[in-house]
Amino acid sequence: MTTNQNGNISTDVSDFLLNCFARSPSWQLSISLPLSLLFLLAMGANGILLITIWTEASLHEPMYYLLSILSLLDIVLCLTVIPKVLAIFWFDLKSIGFYACFLQMYIMNCFHAMESCTFMVMAYDRYVAICHPLRYPSIITDQFVAKAAIFILARNIISTVPIPILSSRLHYCGRNVIENCICANMSVSRLSCDDVTINGLYQFAVGWTLLGSDLILIFLSYSLILQAVLRLRAEGAMAKALSTCGSHFILILFFSTILLVFVLTHVVKKKVSPDVPVLLNVLHHVIPAALNPIVYGVRTQEIKQGIGRLLDRAWY
Image (cartoon, rainbow, N blue to C red; front, side):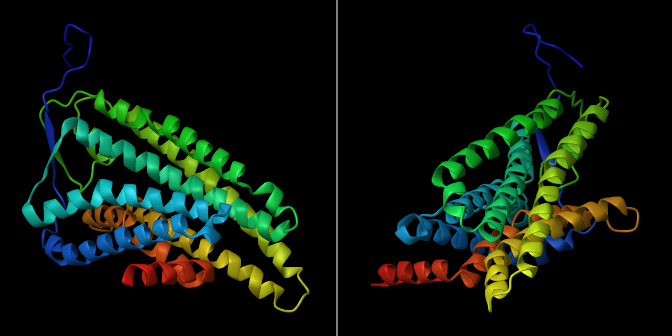
């Protein structure tokens, strides 16, 4: 490791090469078209959803503001990852700048944590709506959403910023080929000549602390919601209560299922191709983003009507 006159760490690597599916290169051709369509769907559906919520006065409510935050996070994650992956597939543009790689690493870690935190806030919103309906207007207010947004930003920006800093300060002394489609922390750190134990431990601790605590609170919220729903006696009340939570629960299922499969493939990595976790990591950035606005658009009458009015105005 070398140090310049200012005391900053220097490196022998100026850029990295992203080597997607090194053991299954034929996957690139077969995946490129579906991935492109999913990317266009994610961008279009989330864009329409954001414009609908912005322009429809009837949707200016806390629940839809939280959904807007989720759509913004999905758009940023997609734009951070998918265009570069498609550039590799189509034009073999594998090179990514040294600092651009760590910027991508930070955005991915930070925004995934923000997304998890948003799901947790949305679960609390549904808990109050079902378990304390009379107090809902006084608890879930515009001020609550503003405070929640500040919490989502502050918690995840601060807790994830050490991940790229620790990785960027390692000494990269020659190897620059990342066996991944994206600048995942450990895929990059393993190229260095230094000990990466601290990097791995920090990512593990932060990941399980943030995502783990969010999932526990989400599970707790839905357990209390289920208990409250089972106590409902009025005709149709149970179906209505479950309907209000259904869309949110499906979104969490999309988010957590791909994440769970990704973790499991790492656990049994000796039994599956190393390219499988790489593929799942890429899909995790686009499939939930593409399906989230569709689920809400199909299952939420107010959004469906708002999109209909938006399209009518655009058409005429």
